[in-house]
Length: 351
Ligand SMILES: NC(=O)c1ccc[n+]([C@@H]2O[C@H](COP(=O)([O-])OP(=O)(O)OC[C@H]3O[C@@H](n4cnc5c(N)ncnc54)[C@H](OP(=O)(O)O)[C@@H]3O)[C@@H](O)[C@H]2O)c1
Image (cartoon, rainbow, N blue to C red; front, top):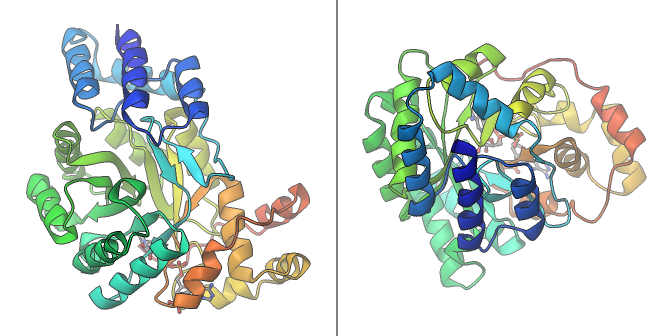
């Protein structure tokens, strides 16, 4: 029954969202995927009804079914369009602008420049204190006709202090951003004891149409990820973890496959204060020279070809433009292997 409703849900969803690519429709329908998240009321209602009818199954059986349904999902990036089809049938851009450590004013400008240059993905968080600036940058770009609201994908994060009142946290982020809905909200950090309740608040907001997709950040072991998934209903669309050439997150990426969950890299360039370590790495420098590109561009292109959504942070207009100019070249298989060889399981952050 659950699977039948899923097929209906896929059809409704793909008719409802114009951004859903034809290839994506075929992929999802042919593998009989479940659609766990949507703003579309029909889909949500179908999902809720199905869960009620299916009340005889246990929580762990449900978790098993979710895994089974997503196992064959095609989460390959479309490098021509610069998007990936998430496990809920929604299309997401794979290169975005990050705003960690940016003031409200810097965030406003960075977001505005990014949208002008072609970016469609924006990453912020309540704890960055710049959601209002991000919202202003979006509004400026919309007012000047660079983009429409529907064309952009806005991500924010719920901070751990707010986990006990997730409903208010979501309302407050919506208000600060000045948006009617948020494309993706993720829990900022794992917090056994309070993150399940926070995630359930996000699930309710999906039903209410306030959030389109939900996911996680900073879950570094399969066990911790499964703990959250098994206690909740909607499978996370992505996991945002520190990921870069020196910390390639291979174990977690392998684990995510069974959920159709994609990896998103924070510190994609190593993070403020660490970028020169990666930019001067001799392997990266030599690949950059071979392509006539900068080290930053090589690293970002590697992220996309390796299947990591990347959200480089910058307050510099030139860097923002440079970071988007990575769709006109390709790393060879041999170059990708050399990049893979740089993995040393080394994180730059200690949280
Ligand atoms: N979930 C989490 O816990 C978490 C944690 C950290 C970050 N994040 C998110 O991930 C995003 C990315 O991480 P991040 O911003 O901390 O680190 P990052 O993107 O790895 O690096 C940002 C640094 O790179 C520099 N940079 C960017 N493009 C450059 C270029 N083309 N050439 C030279 N330097 C360049 C920036 O300086 P300029 O400003 O001078 O360009 C800045 O110093 C954040 O902005 C945030 O949205 C999430």
